[in-house]
Image (cartoon, rainbow, N blue to C red; front, side, top):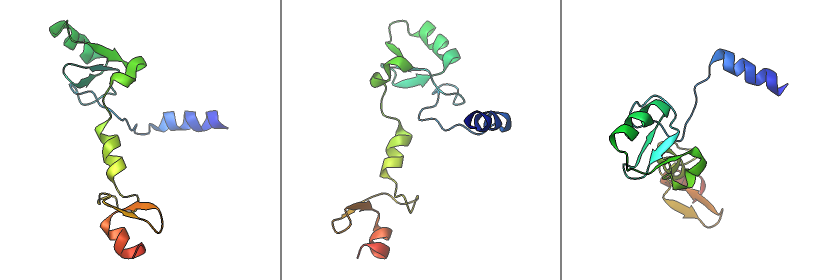
Amino acid sequence: MASKLESSLEEKGSEAIWDYICTACQALEPQFHCEECCKCFCDSCVNLHNQLYKTHPVFGRERMEKWPIAKSTLNMLEQCGEHSDEKIKLFCEDHSRLCCHICVLLHHR
């Protein structure tokens, strides 16, 4: 059953959500990160980077602990789950929840 679902998604072509995007072409999921430039590169862009900057340390996905935390992940952590345009700023001790100022007014008075 799961294989049918996967193949139907591939046929229809769903949009992928990536934590990182290639800094150079802005189109593909990166496979490499340059520690010195602090930039991510896809397979084709890393070749050009490596030709220009031969001494820069470049790490592939097998060494992702060397990659920085994705900005989109940080943004998601800061966003309110109920109000996506608001940042989490407060903690409700009664409910033990992080919330934005709108949540405080509506649910945590």
